[in-house]
Length: 296
Image 1 (cartoon, rainbow, N blue to C red):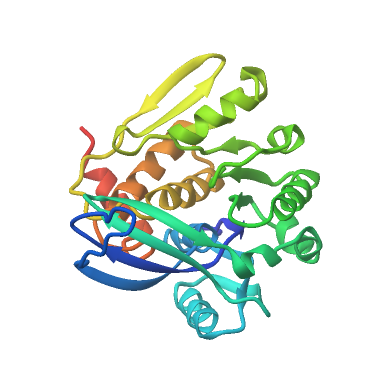
Image 2: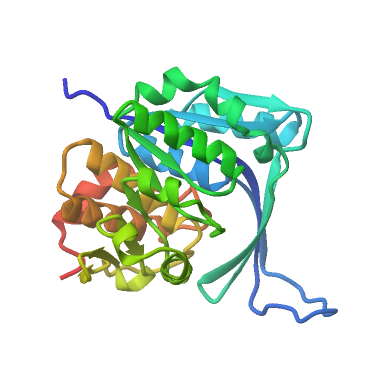
């Protein structure tokens, strides 16, 4: 039997409060929306579910509140095959993300709450989990000190690190030096290039561009790997799906180019259903989709 990739995700765990609307209200305006849903989310949890559905052995490190949202999310993650042994309840409430979906795109407001309990000392207590991984996947919806500690542990133990720098913030040079791959969107890429030199970013950048696919940046050269053509219902979670797919593909020994193509397929399929996690595909679905050659 083929060995399952070991992927550790250190990141955020939210309850997504999703409103679908035909029109976005102006300040002071009240409108009637079309639909409302509550879905487990958070970039960390999303990426963990994406990787688990693709067949990886996934462990999630993070915090939830000792409340109903936290209990529901943990049970949901267990049902998805994510190991939540290292997710701990804290006194703060579970993080929430208020998402407005309009015209096949979205805007998001996150209240971190329990996510800000993922401190450096908390992550240090999970050292053995990180050092036993093939890939470490981190984002920026938790405290930066927690991200830095996770990356530091991974680097000390030869674990490949993917940093999804979202939401973008000021990042230390040492952190950028330690990560193997950065997966910003176009807006985040602009801010990274303002802060870091081309040499510091060389060979690390994998820029996600939505319907245009992704671009690999190395030695001043840009290689675009096109997106797959598919009918879009909701783009929420597409970036997280790409990151989960990229991590799984790299851990299976794919070349970077092929891993990005695989991630593109995962992201494309994730947009066919409403919600961040509900549309995330299985490994079998991705393989069948790629064989169909939908980006040709």
